[in-house]
Image 1 (cartoon, helix red, strand yellow):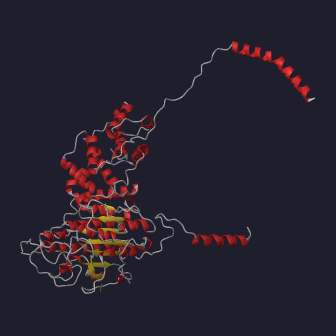
Image 2 (image 1 turned 90 degrees about the vertical axis):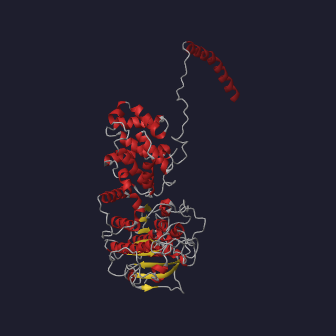
Image 3 (image 1 turned 120 degrees about the vertical axis):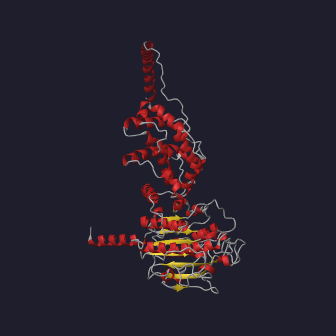
Length: 434
Length: 174
């Protein structure tokens, strides 16, 4: 080959490799145009219905001492709580939006959760038995992130069952179970009553696994219909299924051996469901270092009948979030590379209902008044990415909405620009970022 | 000229014709009437196995039927509630169903034949397995597949076969 021909062909090949588009596993024509700003996002739904009156305005004293400065609450009936595991107030680790708004739709728990994970307000016709109508943040991530990831990197950790398992993927035909997150309700799965039933699975050896796959493939091919994606939820790869099964098995063994008997590290304090849920979310973080994990707490909802316990559970939730942040910062691979977003799903009414607790305090519902739409958000993250110790918004000039969380997560993980236009009506909470 | 050649050819044909007749008569008078055999298979209507199964089992039905198919008895209401709760606590249904099924198989009360029993009468074992888990007879090809598999693989066990049936797509349907 002549030198001139060689140079011409090399130049043409180089030019075409830069200019020619290519199809990526996510179905995109071009490589990701957005850029990763952080390696991981943990989204904590500080849910159950929390009023800004108690959380931000501290009407009962500071009930969130791990997060905010303020004079400690002196209200009778509060349980002791351990000191925060983190060395400073969480609000100093990032930006606080003290006046976020849940602007539209019913202030129901499932509505609020759905808005938080889909970035779309819901109407009154929400069916509690169905997956959301619009794609969840997990589906946006698994469909549009580049390089493409598997469900092992996307987790939805719920503190209960009810309608919440349905939030790991939507009914949207362009997304759905194929892009759904791994859901787990750990306090349900690891309940001691389940231990005898699922803790001793038959273990097949490698050569046996090969054989049974051979037989099952034959059976499935003979049948010709796939049960997967027809109501059987998401599906992990075979190797990741094994990893997750082993992980669940190890959690059960630890639970059975008493390793979780005192999760707060302080005897005499009742660890509620929120504390345990967060504990298991932390186990997932340590084991899988997921790129996107969403976890919720809901125990403050006891406020429908017991205001004092609401305050107790608010303090425990505050402690649990600080513990989560501590774990993230002590997990190699996630420390200094994780955005933590903390948001309640909605607030509670200004006016109480008629139920009094033993201290004479009236309980609170959440039926859609202006106060029940007032919430807050905290966005914590690494220096250089997140603005620290900053407060954005005031009661007279509120900043941010519930529907802004999904675009903000997408921005942090760099797939925001790949979500089709018109899908997300919210905005990125850019005020939080450097 | 052309006409003359044609007349000459026709006379030759007239001379050869009786000879050909005689030759053919000789040949066929000595032959026996041959029977014609047509070899073909009986007509078989080919359909996909379990084609009439279109209804997905609910979570509750799946777990309770798996149990009764393996143990020959039904789960108590409380046992079923516990298992369905665990099933609902994991988003990957295949993953958790697998855990539940493997726990069933490891339970000493499960009615699983020994390898010796399986090999004592392989066709009977296959038929019983299809009836037990798929509520139908195996097709010819399915019978052949399993007979061949069991004959050629000394390490195949009834547990492996049962597990494959219980976690197959067809088992998820009525």
